[in-house]
Amino acid sequence: MKLTPFIDPLPIPQYLTPLERHKCFSYYEIGMKEFFHEFHSELTPTKIWGYEGQFPGPLVNVNSGECAHIKWKNELPDKHFLPIDRTLHGSSEHMPDVRTVVHLHGAEVEPESDGHPEAWFTNNYHTVGPVFDSTVYKYNNNQRAATLWYHDHAVGITRLNVYAGLVGMYIIRDEEERKLKLPSGAYEIPLIIADRGFNEDGSLFYSDTTTVRPGPVQPGLTFPHPSVTPGEAFENITVNGKVWPYLEVEPRKYRFRILNASNERFYKMNLSNGQKIIQIGSDGGLLETPVYMDALTIAPAERMDVIIDFSKLAPDDTVVLENTAATPFDFPPPIGTLPDPETDGQIMQFRVVELTGPDTSKVPAILSNIPKLRECDAAQTRDITLDADIDEYGRLKFLFNNKGFMERIDFKPKLNDTEIWRIINTAGATHPIHIHLIQFQILDRIPFDAQGFTANGLLSFTGPPVQPDVNERGWKDVVQSPPGFVTRVIMRFAPFTGRYMYHCHILEHEDHDMMRSFEVVERKCGCKNNCICKEHKPKRKCECKKNCRCHGKCTCKKTCTCRKKKSNHPSKEERRHKKCPTCPPCSETYRCECE
Ligand code: C2O
Ligand code: CU
Ligand code: CU
Image: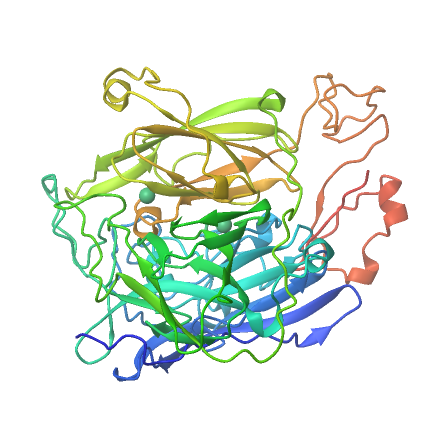
């Protein structure tokens, strides 16, 4: 079914208001609902899922340092309307169909609020996953201004839940950014891009089987139906929930926060009139200086904060945001397909109207300062190979270091350590690799002999390192890792300890089986008392026999699990005086963090 482009106006997601404002946090509730959504005026409404019954979900808008507590509620039916593959990790017959868990992508959060794939819950928390911890997630937003996004992360069905519509944008603002006088208010607009397919009756299309079957089905097994595919792309490009919308713009500057919320599709975006797009921010916030780009290649889950200056255009002029990226990315035909200029080659249209007032916004020459993480500060270098494998059903399956999601954790960075991760791509396709908890910097991409590496495990570089593109030289949490290159990223693991994920953000890869955990651990110093101190060597000798983080004082870090009310929990003073309580088990956990 061919839909007419540019006949529906671009919807603009609305800000969500908190239910309660407390002195030190705002409280929100966000329910996931099933509803009918109009993707295009020529299409009958489509059954989808969305946060607060919207697709994309409402905008969460906070100031840096302002805590937001969000109760995520699953109000969905018990049956999924998309095809579930029961052979994937965490997806067996015993698992409820409709499990959800929310990850705030790009946020520095405690592991309990990070949306661990196995912390899922069903409608009204009726059934919960093995690591489910709480119904209210706590985001302290102690990070610089940035465009984040929230989306589902349930084990084994993330691709389906996100495709069903469980995505939304989350904006952190700060003073540094406000001072810049960037376009704001009505001139600052989110663009959440996601491709979708529709059946004749308007219902959402998603493949229930795959033709990519390079190997045999192992004896004793039958090929599953439904089955996951190695990636799903669709011909209709939606922006903020509409297929090929248009936006009326005045001849002035606009700021667009672009998010690629697609499952598999990359976009290489350009403006049809040849005008440059000015990129001012990446995943983790503002760049140091604006960069003027002819085209922007955005992978799934990446964010690009841009300014488009329409001031040279006259009323009635139109400009199309076009896409030229091959799918799968970046395979030229015959393996991949180039976009059709009539369909997936277009994203949206801008229509110029009369100016309503002077444009006082700016594109400052200096936006921010990004302290460089130094290679010499790295305590460790870890290697991640991206491997293509064949599973027991003869299907293509992608892995990290030839291990799946369910295998033992082998990456344990120490709290506050800087590390370099080398992403070694032998797997043929570009994979967008995302790491939770932190923002990293891209060091470089070094070409290497992938065949030799696969054959004998020896890493030999075949050329000089390629510097990251100018628009990649800021904070990032997703990196495009092209085949035949070792992509090096550097980051500091802070401010929390615990388990987090790293994975490919092509959602069909993440579910099968390109996701692993890492665990940030306390630093243990070398003394006999096994104390956990901030420095490698404690200044004074630790006297206690416990695993403590001390400088001679006892400061055990235990998790109190008592049934007592908050007010009955030991005071800061008591805690400081080493009365870490051991109370009977409770629902309210709190962590004693005596220093
Ligand atoms: Cu946006 Cu772990 O994901
Ligand atoms: Cu994330
Ligand atoms: Cu991938």
